[in-house]
Length: 192
Image (cartoon, rainbow, N blue to C red; front, side, top):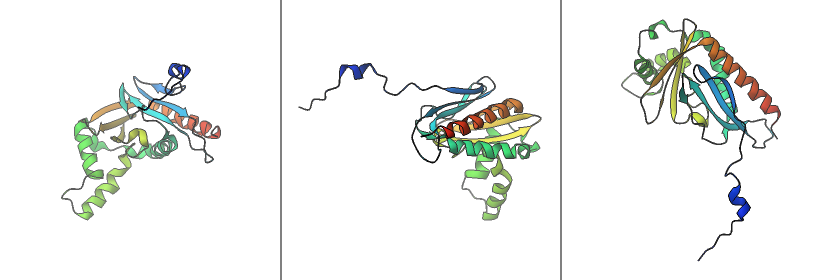
């Protein structure tokens, strides 16, 4: 019989350290929740947990540990750089499900389109990719982003469910993302 000795004091400690969570924005509009888990490295990489909230809907898995937040930061920086180019008037009359279906098909699906059609769709629509492959927190999600009339529209789906869609004020989106990116740069200086 194998016996494992666990000191009594160890039973009273939490299984993982309590970490200070940061929230940039407001979950009722747009927010980013994150935690820096101190994983020592020499490259200034910031590991932790994160998710995005848009009108109380969660995009990302906050319980996924030790995600490289710099990957997500890079995706968000690129989105900020192309925000003005995301206005697509033809999207305005589409439901969230229709928009998700259009972008998912155009960017990610292998179907009966010719190679030329796939290339044309990718050229036109890939700029609307949001955080698909945007870090481990978002591995189970596909998400897309568009803008119109001072608003940011995000449509997304977790692999096991149908699409969700929200529209948030662009100022709320920009404010939360800018604050997160500033925090991420500061945390990168504190790695070690």
